[in-house]
Length: 248
Image (cartoon, rainbow, N blue to C red; front, side, top):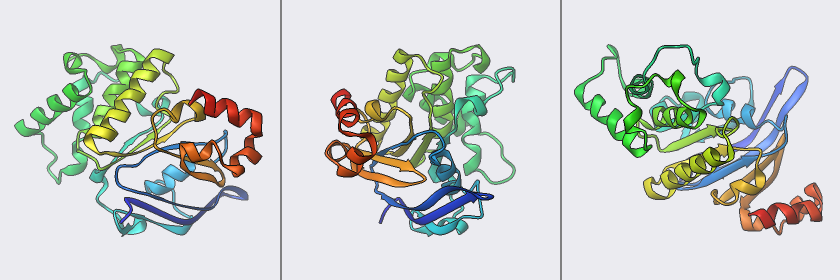
């Protein structure tokens, strides 16, 4: 059974079509690079799949359940674009921000326990930021903040992790380090991952599959198949496609 099954999803903002007949399956253990040009519908697709946008046609299933009735959101970790994720002036410590990720697993009253404290510390260790637990998040570098936000998404032990252009504000060294962390979570923890990126060439070094979207699915499959795909040759042109695959 696929972790995620999308069938013929279409969505429009008024008269402007954002998604057209999008279909694909994500299997357990996949690491999907979701790429495409600006305005391709990447973030729109993710918002539909997270239940943040209604009014679409088609259907999707998460863990075998129709998305419109899905309620086990603790099984899904989400890291939004950094610019929308956090107010740097908010006086929260790293441990407090990571602890927020555990709230999705709690019923009322949402009180933290000693077990939660242990889980927070374990997650910080996993992300290599245990020494930052008592620091204010607003004082950290961009790369450190992204690790904190990822730790928050990981705290409830999700089976599916969705990341929306998490490296946009990072310098090249921090970006490589962050991608390495996601790859490690995928290979060692078995967390199925979908990462939105503009960097089609670099994501091929980490993801095992590429979903190239431009309102509709242009290509979906193994990155090595992408490099030989006639659909992508027609889309990019042979020279550009060769450069992308050469970087991979």
